[in-house]
Image (cartoon, rainbow, N blue to C red):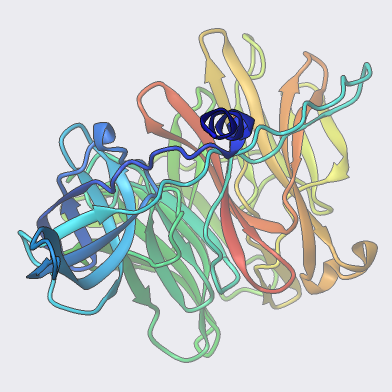
Length: 449
């Protein structure tokens, strides 16, 4: 009989043997502000960004009716959420739902950690001249709206990047990288017939908190302007109105420049000059000198890059959306189109497209990579005049000395109106991309640059 038992135990496959499960880590809420909770969990406790948690209060003690042994206390659930940031001595979490009062001293319990991602199958070796296909590191939460613009900045001064996304009427702040679909702060543009066409982020007033520049088109008054917002006490507070469009580009050394332009009620030539935007004596104004990109009159769709040691190139999108690198002598032009946008405004006889950004990265040896989006129109391109897109590609291009070539590209499965190169922590960079599908829903994807 003993031999049979031993044989049966030995016959159990290793994969079927029972593995002890570690008890859920329990801690405390240290502080609560709006939908943000400070918890005493650290990486040593298993805290990672995106891990769920439950908040509860302890009720009466439960005792076994026969032995009298304590079975613990009743847990009265007060709320739940997910971690958005893990620091050395605490974690920040977003409270997604509440069923009771949450305050300092409430108990917190970490949920099950996400299963480790399965390593993707190794891609087959590329043939000479074949472009590398890049796949996303992460895909964020499902967002129930079409993203019209994106901005990245440190809006609440915590020293970490945050993401603002907009639809046509509202804008929402998310913890990076928008792994939870519940925003931290929401704002809405007042008025009828007013829609958001672009977002920018910068700390121009020097208070260590990024301002949000929301550029809107007011159709009833036929006016374009930018509203400036800041996060204060967990809300968006409007701090200024600017009668200008606002958009960032890079100068020839890679420095980010916040520029502005006035659109005039003029059929023949509506474009004002392009200037840097500055903050002076408590208000925003056009700086000097003017920015004069040759052959460019529209604020959306140009930047600069130091492609070689001798000369900086002006990079811009032509009237047919080709990418052009302009030098003092000669130019290079792409055979395919880039930067197409569903966000557009008819201004008399002109169609003004609010192209997604393009930007360059630099290293110790100078220029490295140009990132540019190619949105793909429905019906094989026939829907392009109507601004209808159901696909997109993110291209990473290097300069050979005579032309741009695609080092890698990523199929986005939807169009993109915003992306940025972000440094979530010192020494680590990644690309964050807002992707909108043909169903009108969106998500944030991240890529290795």
